[in-house]
Length: 329
Image (cartoon, rainbow, N blue to C red; front, side, top):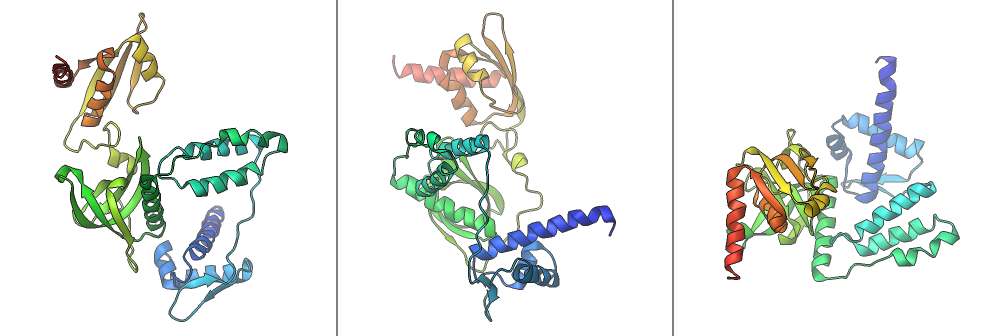
């Protein structure tokens, strides 16, 4: 092996060994040597050498019993981290923002915030009580947290999940599916799961709130499809509603000065172009596959936005406004 490639390979091995420690600590007695070889796509002999490093180099109490996987007699703990003041503040703000996302466990976050607070000098700590805003606990939040915890565990260990799912597009029909979870993502006030569905034989998006029940299927694993790319999957649509059958179009909007200021403050889409006019109004251009979600976004701004192009979108928005006006006539 060329000398310049050796550090890269050594770094990869160190990272792999740390991952093995994390996997065994998280799922004791689940992984045998052959399972780890499959997980990391290397030979069983290479895994054996890594396990020897864990036992003798890191001096961790790695054990295994006949017929079961590896486990630690004493679960290893990672060393504490040191942060600068600005790093700790940034991390604290991020954790506090996560408290407002419905579905993220409040008890776990509270524990994380308490740990972060201990990093700060005493004179700063009197500020923290006013920064803590515990979200209201509801059955929906508890269900989301339960589902997200299970789904993220399945993603980590590449395990299939059986779900009972409610499909709104089919008049609320509820059915059983087996899915391969790829990723979870928050969107607006809910969470979405992107997963391969064995029933449909395709990668689909599931709303987590519509998963009535979920069970990790033991002794099952899956591999993410080689051609799966999250950005490509979501495509050029607006938001997360994928316009599979819709073509990408040039959209030109004219916002008045008040709405224009609001819209210009945010990055709504990677293709957007903003052109502020002399009167303070704004021309907003973007290239997207138009979805119902985008139409609803336009309707939110009412008479403060005019669709210039394309004509079919202009007519659709005008029709929706007329239908709404008829309710009040």
